[in-house]
Image 1: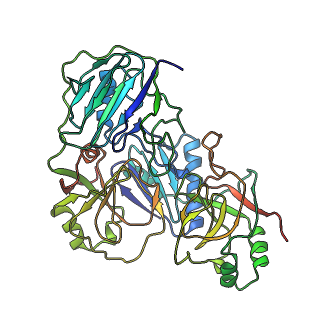
Image 2: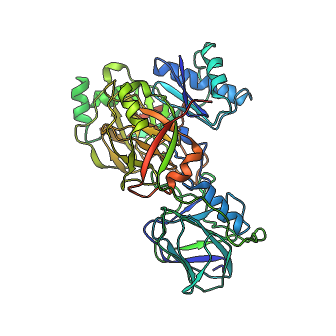
Image 3: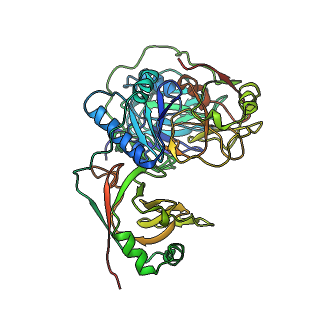
Length: 205
Length: 289
């Protein structure tokens, strides 16, 4: 683990895997909930957790690097089910990458339990992990100028659902009617870091 | 329809509602947003008797024109600009009474970029995640003003300040930004860091509320490629593939994959908000403290 100062009031804690980043994130949330850590933002990402709004980042850096991060506790919270029509325009390309049939893509994807590793790109856009590395796929060579809201998509090791229409280069495998982001709802985001997710196929032929 | 409202007669190039923004939601992909020149927004609020976090208007270069439906006290600050009420010049940087139905015109800036307009009672559009700020990156908060927009106002809270003109820093003729190195300065060649902190850049016209873009010598990389996405802070100096530093401002993305060579001190971002395109920029290295 490395703890890199970011300006005068933030710390970027870097670990060597996504699993470690999720465990570190869970541990930092626990410390904050127990009043052991005062911080404005805890932002997990692929291999890092950013702590912003710290009084003394240097002291926290030495504290963190001197301690072991316990493995992420198994969350007791309910799994969020997202119903999906697996009929995306890139389903055939993904099937070719995976060397399976299109229906098999849907089956494999829907049988996987995902975890939201982190959010970014847009409010409520989660980067979900859970598929084994052999199912990594590249981004599209040419990004789309408009990906419809609710598109269920893959890129690299991640699955994501577009909260609103936006440009995007991910491979679209399906679509959902679930509302990923509604600022009038509490909570506004359906998915937040650490949320467990299952995609449930609907309307299968 | 309430009398406590403002009608936008001339929206200007880009005028938005801004307060202190919505920090605390970065883990959901929500930018902090908020006024770029926070001290200017706080000052004009104080001049009209508002709390410092009340929502104000942030204009860009050519101001805006507003017609209140009830008599209000306003104050214009930030970038210096001519201010008129029904065509008659009134004070900039001081409380001004605008009668119901009169036309307040905030003119084109003399220098700087962004003027701030506070109105007694504050602008009370519905907050989103605790803030009324327009976030141009993610589209949260009210849309930028258009001609005809009607903005609700709150009830005046306190007495306005009794001052002739409140002192405000002049927009910078040269923008000096103090930076602390890292977290990814090791992704650049030692030469690149020396270039970054010794050469002069200029503010690019492509700058916006997301970032202050610069023109100048490209910074060479010691490591190729992109980082896995990582969290970004206000003031982060990100270096995209073209090698020109970008200073992240209030509407910056919460995560990014281009390396951050250094971070600008928060106190220096007020000047960055007022640095017009073409302004020389120097980055000065300071130590972590």
